[in-house]
Length: 191
Image 1 (cartoon, rainbow, N blue to C red):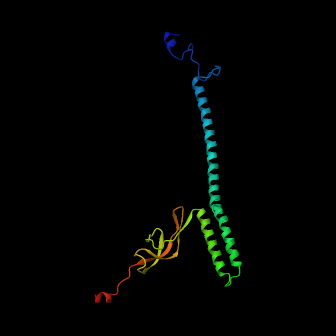
Image 2 (cartoon, rainbow, N blue to C red):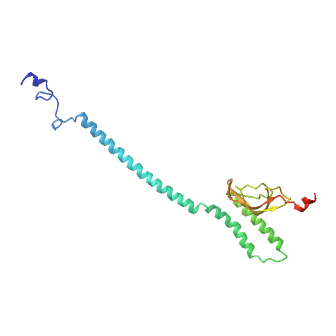
Image 3 (cartoon, helix red, strand yellow):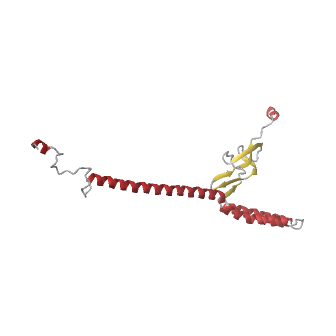
């Protein structure tokens, strides 16, 4: 062999092990890196799959809980309303005559108060807007009426009270709004 052959990197006397040489018990650093990366990839993939399965289970559970809340969310309120309802039922079974009519009215008023107290425990409040300025966010005007008992633009009659729940209007009041009384033209002509 010539000297030039000895200087080439792939000659017979070279100490470099061939990639295809399986006789070397020690893996090449590149093969170790590939194997380590493959193991790391497999672990990451498994972790991802477990996380994805956990998230899918969480989503299913959250949907189920929301459904249950929508279905039974009002249960506490309904149970609380059953007591005033029972009181109304007992009142309706009572025979009414001239001797007990005042007691009957008092009982109905007390039951109404009990019902309002039950609603207030759940954040519901009634609002009687009589005499207040008309607010289209809180009131529904059914008509207007000429009157001098209330200033124009103020509520002079209430058909249905407003109700709020935690400061949100859940039912606007149905009202009549006051307007100024028009003077007769004949009275104006006389002056």
